[in-house]
Image (tube, rainbow over all chains, first blue to last red; front, side, top):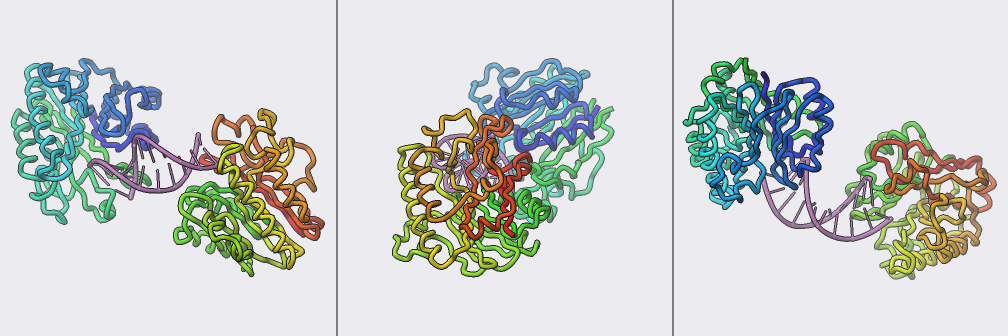
Length: 261
Length: 261
DNA sequence: GTAGTGAGCG
DNA sequence: CGCTCACTAC
């Protein structure tokens, strides 16, 4: 089974590229982030016409996540509060979480807040959001030994995940507090699928639109699959497909594909 | 000699279509309207690389005219005040007029104000603008017997120039006052090149983007070539090329080509 | 419906 | 840089 994460930066703008890619890469589950569209306007039919099932949680202009699955998913839910009813409903105003189960694997598709700048209000929100995510995953782990969390984490855990033109410690997406918050989550029992197969640096999944970052390969690896041990064992490959980033009018992110046997 | 008028509705958005058309139709002079770009940002090189000379008068966001000529033009000037220095400079704030001479023919490329709605302030401006245009042409006629005025006139003179789903008299671009203002200009000594060759209706140069007007052929003939007698005699054809309007992301106008022997 | 602008975001 | 929105124009 192939599970893909791809921040498409507007599904309406990127629809043709996503459909072309999916036609050539008929993966099992495609996890999209930053769809930037309300559910009523999500372009479902191009996916259903390819034989996929579509599960979405979107809003106007910002955020938005989607699960596109060849087989129907079960136990689909959007947001934190579906799993953690005690939470304030405000935690689900931003559409950043959707989950479903396929073949006994719970897939959690995430769009982690960007955080803007270290110390900003949005930064503090990002850190709080990650503590809620930890609680959410902790709950899911009670009933699901096989969990794949994937998405745009907006965090690079190690310096080899970032080009060397940047001082990680002082940069959003690489600060101590962000990395620690993510490590606290992984300590629940998740491992980075990509690092099972690739130990060297220089592999990135996002390049800033500005400063010709892609041409100069000034990238970051911030799109991840984190697997519980039973799945990590079964992981057969984890590949970043750089090609979509080379197209004209690309997303700033490119797809990452994990294959689980 | 072939002289073309084409309201391109943004030369930056339409550049590829215009260049493709010009490559396949290597006309002598291409008169563009609604270029919607300041002179510094006009895409000159695609035209110069085809061997054309470029003369422009543009502004930000609105209006803008250009003369694209295979041979260099002489006596090029933009605006009314270059010819009528007594006018208030405000008359040239909107970039709607450019003229130049080739082979003894003075070409006047116009983007007549749209007028918005009958009775509006913009409507009154359109009518006043047409009286200034009359004065401008009257002056030019003193020294040039061979004049071709062409462009987007935003006026359909006869009911056969408009599809029949509209009540002309009450419609902007067809009101009595607009038609009379244009007739007052033509009485200086200009004749409609298109009507030398085609007497029947149903030939249009503009279709509203809205209401699927092109598919239903609900068009207007508002892009014209008006010729002084010496040129009218020499006119060999006047053709509306509907094909560019059929492309994806077209201008709402399509080119009109007059051939002068 | 399809251009343009400017602001907000990342 | 490239996406959103809300606005304006035609």
